[in-house]
Amino acid sequence: MDTGTAWRDFFASWPKDMPHRGVLVTNFDEQVPFDGFMTTDTLLLVERRTPDTIGARKLILPFANILAIKLTDVVRQKIFAAGGFTGELPNQG
Image (cartoon, rainbow, N blue to C red; front, side):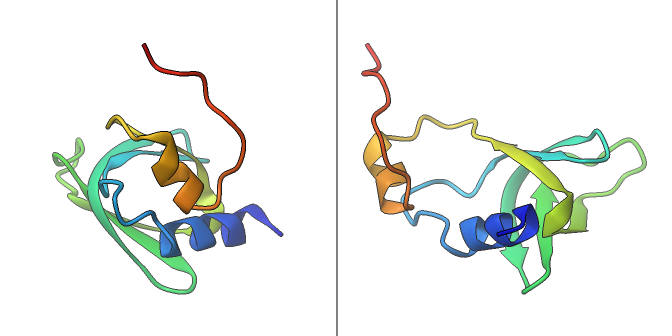
């Protein structure tokens, strides 16, 4: 499975109890804080929290351009398990 397909599948099955926000890391060296998203079969649209330096509030990019997602909210392990992740994370004290 290529990374674009993996990211498409992740966004398509985003865990329902996980807030739709975080930081999108792209392969063109940009980190985009977002507060919502929409998908097509090939593209991701994210709503920026604040406009970028040229005033853009939305970003549309192919899934293949995503390197990582950083989550800014506390998310419980069981929510990740519902999203298909396996294994154990250390207890958060």
